[in-house]
Length: 176
Image 1 (tube, rainbow, N blue to C red):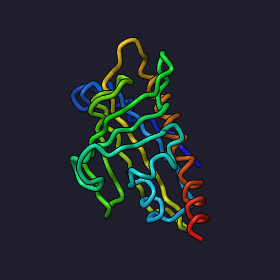
Image 2 (cartoon, rainbow, N blue to C red):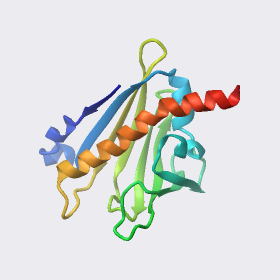
Image 3 (tube, rainbow, N blue to C red):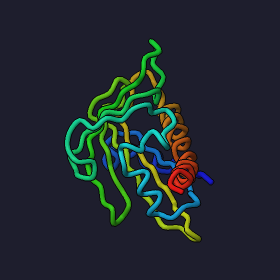
Image 4 (cartoon, rainbow, N blue to C red):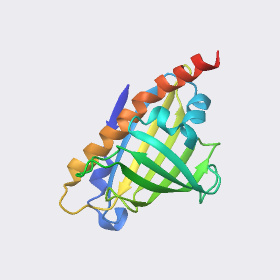
């Protein structure tokens, strides 16, 4: 079950509070315990297991669980006019295993989202389920509407959330 919540966009009209950025969030409930979900989503080497459009994720510097860690993600996250792969250099702003949350900032990319902030937070739900909340904040893009960009990012992140449960099940089968 995935729910979409873009009520944060209403606040985007107040530039003093939201700094003129575009915002959105996607939530979904996964039928898996929070520790299993965290084990998957917090490891760079497992990114392609639950992000269908990611082909490669490479460590550039630092330790993946410490602020300052930098990784390069490449694949077909965002369509390119020349058919090339998109790439994003991300820096870990914060990671807290106790609250099952992290924040990455897009430092550089070929998709126009430099400076974007992506936050992921897991919350224990009932019956060994986990609520995933993925939110994002991006600078307005020229020649693009806020609605279309926020909707597209929502679609991308929703597809990732939808794959998490399957990735956990596949990993469980491999370890048996």
